[in-house]
Length: 271
Image 1: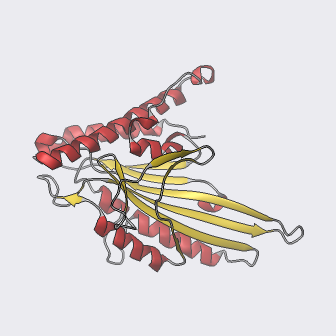
Image 2 (image 1 turned 30 degrees about the horizontal axis):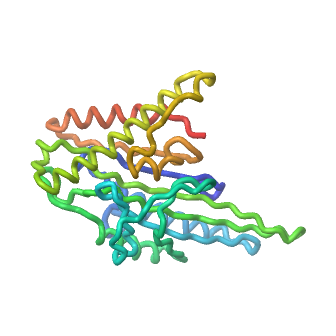
């Protein structure tokens, strides 16, 4: 879709330990890659196959994590500070000073993902040895420039591919979280609750008649995650949600909650 100029988003939601990071990132071995490496590989394969003298392609990537409602740049770990989210009048929410790196091959992206993953916040809980304690957003900015030979005018198509690995929803009594882990869990659950509210509000609007659409308020700004994903959730984007669930009967409540979440998300109609 991004070749047609659409914005695209894929995000993985589910309880802690259900396999979201594995689905999105996978492992380094061949044949074990997740969605993010596969999307990048396919993108460069398609660029190679579609090469034509009057089209120029450029690809830039950024990788950030949202940890305890603060944004960190994973491609520039030296930048330890909390990056600010600002609103652009035309382009919508963006992260100030987030590094955007130009890449020319899949190998470049592979190395950057590797670097970013090392900087990501993970910790052990009772339910998961390498529990992601933050939401990670990997963004690909894909630009196509076409030069019209007759007029020598240049047209540009820009699409944004957002690939999001959410932190797991978790219950403190199941994970045995205490101290910092408990605080992280509370922040994770806060942003996921806001995401749930936004999805519910959007699903409600989608099921209403057109006349009553105007007055509805959607709480995007209640968390950094929903503010940054605003366009992907209810705006100009083709969005897919992956619901990761656990087969264990002990996780019955969380599995049910994830499926309800997915069912609500299914009702949303993007512009």
